[in-house]
Length: 447
Image (cartoon, rainbow, N blue to C red; front, side, top):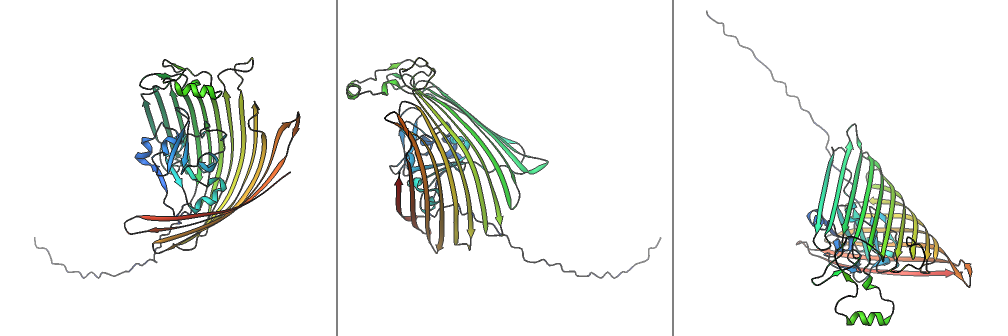
């Protein structure tokens, strides 16, 4: 069978599709300092699991540790510690008892996954008590749009037969991807610490901490809620208690401490019983393309009971010293980006505190009200970055104490203007040189 040849002409029509130019923009966070940040994260952070906050930071240049016990350590930045260093727990200034060298920060570093030490002019936004620097405990961002994930860490230490168990579970709600949550907890337990020649009695400690986080976030706004609870019981080596100069002299002469013994997990007098709760609500709103408004409110309550070696009363459960401090804080921050090299941060803050103490006279009861405002400007020019900040703080305080058998309540007012300027130079090899200066003018009035 023969097939006929068929010829067809097919015309291809050219159609051109064009789109407008696509611009990809991202808003740079202004929560940074031109002074290089020192931080611990990733594998370096994992190595610190089980250690206190002070011990976790000791490898950072300029940071050392003040130790007064096996689990009592306070971070020191360039020789300053206590009220000269501000600790931010998930963005909230940590308010606890800082009355003695044995009062360690009441915070679990495992709440976060990144530890940051901030210096330079940016610290001016946090107030005059950040003169040495700011230590930030920063958690990971909530896993919006992700399925259930988690992590568990088990750590052991031979000295004290210490065990640490820590875990995190987090997820978003699959039917509502913008809604996410996190649950975290830590358990620690340690017995008496040992030296090569003897064991120190009553040097064990135990902790039980947990935190809860939930958040809802869209492209240009978001809100989060956070709650944490820190609970610790710390044994104090009774051989370290010095009642007078004769006790101190005898302790120096003796090669072995007076109060040694065998290993035990039991914690007896003297010891500290500490609890700290923190609640925080924060949110953000992106206004336009270059401005971010942030606001937060936090409440925290810190209680510390101290039990001496020998009770002075009939009830063994009554502490010789008891402190309770309640704190409310609120902040509103505006971060603006005028260009890639010119940014600013401004804000206002407020704080109220009530402190109650029981037992032998140590710290008077007081109430405290304060407010502050700040402005920081940052400018980048070639390899130089200039940053300047100014802050004003006002504080009103009233104390309550017995004087000649009568309760008196004098009040005081303080105002403070502080400024900070820093400049940093970075070369092509990543080497940086920084110069920072600070000015402070303070006035006070009492009645």
